[in-house]
Length: 231
Image (cartoon, rainbow, N blue to C red; front, side):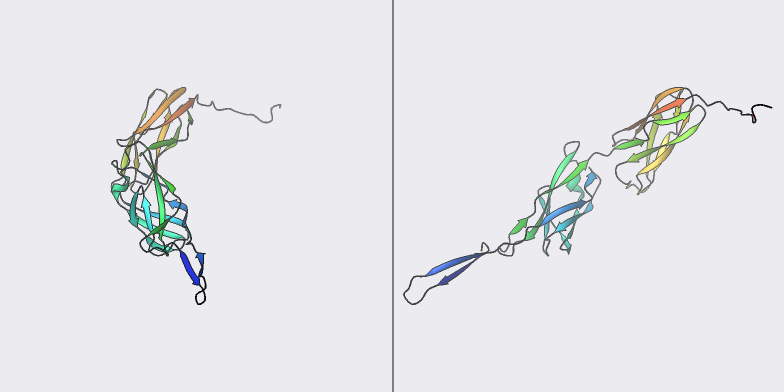
């Protein structure tokens, strides 16, 4: 039952000789996970495990819990993971790193499995970012900044992110960035008011804040050129 074949031999009352023929099953290998990370408390999802040497009856071990996998082919497994696999009880720290292992049935030992080396899956906090940094504009001119979240919005009504300027006398900004369901970003309008630098903050409960700065310069004065310069 260890993958060995015992071959015995002898003649009459002669001594018996034996040979052990060693055999081993292939070890599964994980090359990538799709997705490679999720936001904590973001709900159930399907994890696609890509690699080699997968077989029918394979399983996936996610953060020490074993789940049945759907065998797509020898290079692809998929597994449906419940919301509890990445909720705040599973991930107690701001960011967690979970081990993911593929298991294939051991053909030499019924009921046993052969494990791949573990691959890493990250569970992260929901976060907001802003770009570009800095935003450059001039007095009286308007431009845009992008407000981005690190996972597509799941709420049917979308989300509204508050955006504020710490120095409205230098730069103002649209009060809200609305990101629709299934999207990850939205634009806000930034307007220069006075020469200087202002800091913008994008915030929403349950997300870490996003930041950028705004550099406002004096409005360029129009110039007049006359040609030819000598009459």
